[in-house]
Image (tube, rainbow, N blue to C red; front, side, top):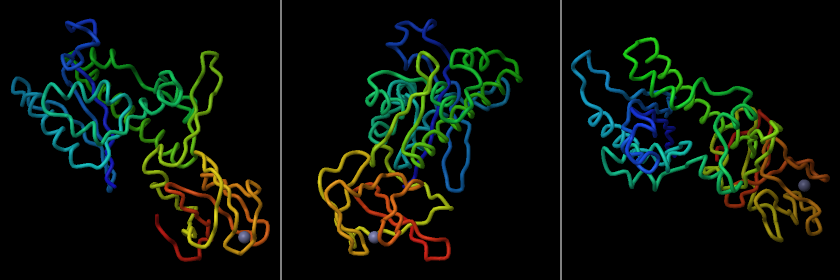
Length: 281
Ligand SMILES: [Zn+2]
């Protein structure tokens, strides 16, 4: 599974373009930052030609679209309604939609309202953005090297916030955002919602798939799976031994002390000690 994170800054803002927010392709790309790997690497996409000899943003954006197409998953915050639309001015972006994981779109569907990257980052990671999109537009065309660098820094920062939020959500099965009263609100995720769930390996927790050695029953919801028979043979009544998706908070079998959780496609995993053989999944 090859994943890439993307964030784009534009040449113009809504109040400068005819049609405003209904004409996002008209904003024009000014800068993009991508993060992918392994090995992990950031790439800045801009018209880096020497003064007076720009290579043209069209060529840069086309190169970016082709690069994005090589990945299985394109992770953005509002990419489906913004970044991809900006890119659509330079080439066919339909393939990008097919590979999209737009965190804002996912959250909006769950919550019924939009939530800002700033709010999520402050509540979940304890740090926030270093600017805003409209400021970045001004910095990028200021002609001032320091301001330009500030915009690049801002765009990189947004990509890193997004990466850290997705990692946090996959590791913990939840994210936080700030409500209107600045209070923390929790958003929980079920298996599959953060596809690919649990793909990020946590070194300190090793697991083995023991799905074939257990039995489960009843309705599985997003976060819980009732186990009816453990790998040790112990039988449980319906909903008396319930596994969660949280690998860092597994349920312990009262009989054999196995630490169990479940993951995407209802696979049951046992947390194993460091000196036992490791199994990737
Ligand atoms: Zn057991």
